Length: 75
Figure 1 (cartoon, rainbow, N blue to C red):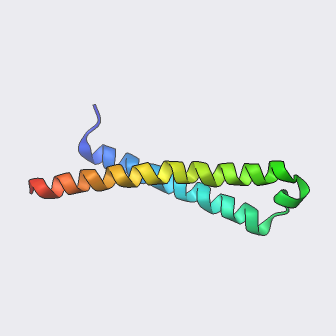
Figure 2: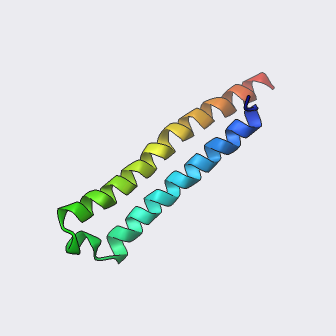
């Protein structure tokens, strides 16, 4: 069973992975020729990477905020 502290660290890790994916997607869009050389497929790859990063970040932030608010109200 995962403790509360381990759960927080896991959520922080998921947020960091999501942020890293978003940054990689933005870097691909800005500094590479993938969207030009691959056309629509390249744009879909970049959008998928950024979308996956956002999909990891947003729910994790909400859950982490609820956990921290619950812990704050208990103390």
